Length: 316
Picture 1 (cartoon, rainbow, N blue to C red):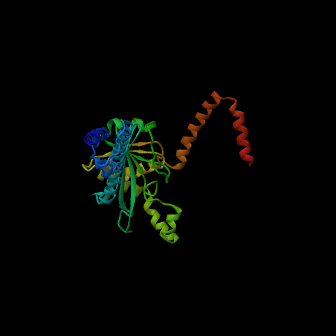
Picture 2 (cartoon, rainbow, N blue to C red; picture 1 turned 60 degrees about the horizontal axis):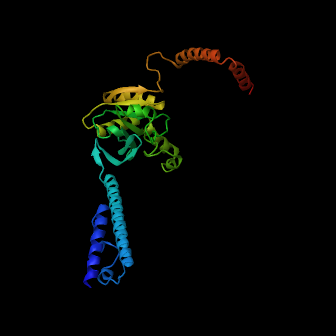
Picture 3 (cartoon, rainbow, N blue to C red; picture 1 turned 90 degrees about the vertical axis):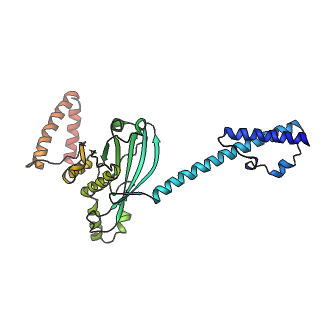
């Protein structure tokens, strides 16, 4: 009758309001109740009316939430597939930008570059080189910050995987966009593993393949990446750790025009004429003797214990 129609109309209006609070206003057909149930209601008591109202509100809310979740998931998947399928090309390499991820204090942006296996072109084929750009969350939108490339030690280790701001990285991101480079053959770059080498062929072919994973190729990768990430030809800085220090010396020899400054935490080979290994170790031994003297002055009881350890090693 007319009174029941008014009740149904008021309850549908209430459901639309609830859907609006969920972010999306839905028409009655978006609920889980069929039109037939709405056209032929059999509810006569106040309790039944309240149950219908609660069911309508619940159905409308869950429908809105589900559709929002599906839409967001679809958008995320589309962005990922678009990045994989339509990577930009710069400096002759394919540059794919992955999703942006935020961790406490840091914003992380993944980059993948398809570079030549052999930069001379003598051996065909390409490999992928991965780099993770790290920015301070407070400066995530500041693209004017210069870049600092971290060259990892090893060789054979990937760059760090930060899950929060801390250590040297916290200080670096205040002044730089830090590029954590997985050098070719490591991490998420095309890996060099025992299983992968078995597919290359006999030992001679494996040796020919591995010669393209030395410091000179790493530097040439870095220059291609610099051209992609700094299209105006700006210079960047490097931070070399251990083997990364030797890569830095190679960088200074092969492509100094791309470097603003170089920082080293190890891996500094002889850089002057006549600096032989004997001279290096002679200078180091004097430093070790001085440090040992200071240690025993502070911990005199350790002298006897360390002497016993040395004697044991000599006997063995």
